[in-house]
Image (tube, rainbow, N blue to C red; front, side):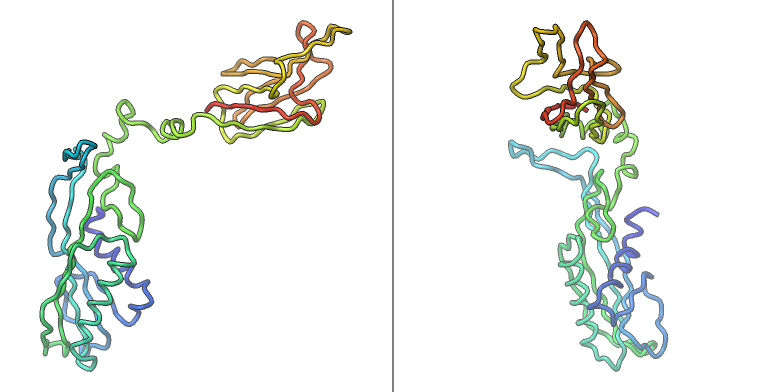
Amino acid sequence: MNEISALPANIVAWLKTREELSDIRFLTEFPAVKKAIPLKYTTVAVGIQGMEIVDSFTENDEGVLVENEFCRQAKINLRLSIHAPYSSGGEACHDAFTDIIDCLTFASGLDILYSGCDSVSSDRDTDAFVLSAWATVNASLCPAATSGLDFPSFITKDLLCGTHIRDEDIHLSLKQKEYLDTPFVTGSYFGMGNGTQSITLGFKPSVVIVLINGMPLFTTDVSTGKSSARSAVGFDEAASIGLELTNSGFKVRTSSTEHISNCYPDLNALGITYRYVAFK
């Protein structure tokens, strides 16, 4: 069942949750079937009487209307068949109509363009007053996500143009869009002393650069000839001494035994604040 045909059932289910409408019984058949005799409660049948679907246009920066290739604009005519018991009086039909329209207009996400009703009539077969009413809803049939009861859109991306949306040669994936929004993160950590410390980013970085603000990339003890690498860079499967990229971030270490050409890693020195930038 697509979302337009399911609209009456969705609206009925939503109206049933409204406390201010708890004294009304909602149904989805339309035209409305004969009700039980005698009718005990005000009963409303919700259905779709008709719809008009036209092309959709958006104004560009120059004020020119440009047709939306994959969108349509729809006006959906909802029909409300309202039956009220004789004991409630004919005004119960109008009360139900106004309460329902108020809820749909101000509490739901439906874009109600206009609404109206006929005159109240008497149905001797069901011993009820009857009111036929309607509401015209404006809907965008666009590749946009739907959201439950608020009905901001009536067609999902996949239903309307799934193969087009999934074509990553012309559309960015969610991961690619996220990368454009935040291609990298920056942060800092405190050194814990000799050993290894893990820094968790929540993603596998493509490039990581670590350094100490205001300090050289490495320092040398002239008395011993030993150098300390206090900065590092890593990408893919490669990294300079003292740095290792992981699936969720990276690891840094300070060591007094590991060295290359008498240069020791010093990326986890006790009490030192290190800064880093990690690219997704």
